[in-house]
Length: 82
Figure 1 (cartoon, rainbow, N blue to C red):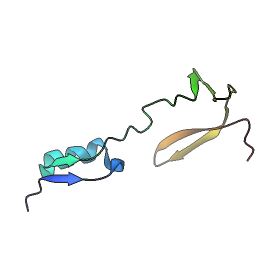
Figure 2: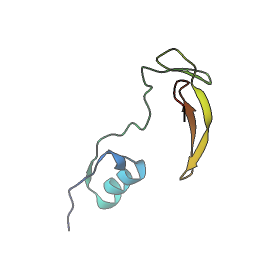
Figure 3: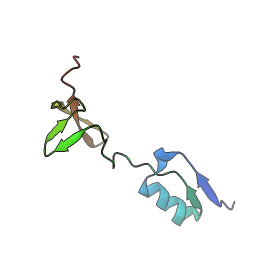
């Protein structure tokens, strides 16, 4: 079977998958780019270890979580109670 192109949604925009499609299958990947947090939200300001919300309040660090080998820092807004 001669596959000319592979389409997928942005969740499959991963270097290993794109490389496999291009080099192993020898097809053109048609997968939208997924920035995965490469942009900073305009409504939050980050300065060193401090994050300021749109209301100009410091966001509090709640802890961290590790999922699938990735560690995420968790923050909460001072106005929200859990």
